Image 1 (tube, one colour):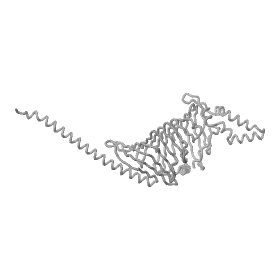
Image 2 (tube, one colour):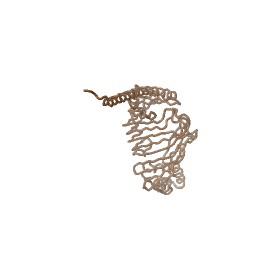
Image 3 (spheres, rainbow, N blue to C red):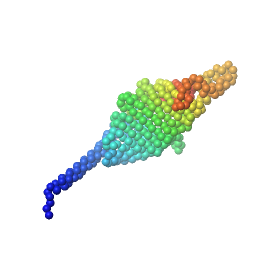
Image 4 (cartoon, rainbow, N blue to C red):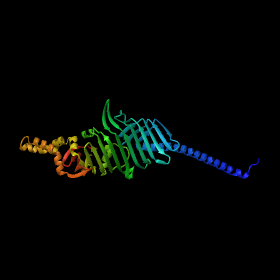
Length: 378
């Protein structure tokens, strides 16, 4: 039985093509494996270099143990028992957590995604932790490089922040969801950066901030901060003093606050006076102002304000007891007074008032009504 040579040629060509294809796949796979392991080694080298640069600026990062994985399409740096120490300018803090996992895709190496396992503890040098933070989920994203960050975001689900004093715990913050975004609008990290910060709070309780924050608050705040010299570690009082000396400002481009029946939106600009206290003004539009006034104890604040004390003293000199009557009347008529001086407005379909929220040497005034005080920032 004879074979037809012409019928064998297509089979030989097909077999040769299959062999070439297999060889190409093997070469590509081998090249990819080699590239990935080389790049993984470079990730470790880059991290070491980044840590060295940060250490010179007083920021020391370390892992109890570290591994690099994620083959074949991404790089994963798994850091067990991470710590961060910040020193310089009188600042000495140590942060410690259970685990940090940082991931970068091979095709997008300048975008780093982090996931954190708590709890996170914060302590001053040589002291026991004074702050502990827990959460259900904590993630971050950083776009850019350590030398030139473009955007950073931090997201927390169900965070709880507590202050520790021996066996006692005081809740500083509890929320369903928190997001913090930041980016550099102008300048560079080491040369007068202007930073935009966006904060979102969902169902947040901040009992130490004000008694009004004992009820859940939803907030969206966007602001830009100018007057920074750099991002080097330093105590916040020192940083705020530098901002004041440089004529820096806090430009609030968006505020939206909602608590129960009260809804408020606004924007404005603030600065620091030489004593470290806020000054400036926000134009606020508020719907449901009566529950807000009750929550902050506005009646009592008006009755005890320095302006009311001065007026009551004058009235008492005219007729004893007249000052107390004026206090009661002023406290009872706050809402009516604000409606008389405020501008009627509509906010998301609700009747509202437009009023200035002023900061004068740390005191806060809604229109002419004193509603609280802000501590000095340095």
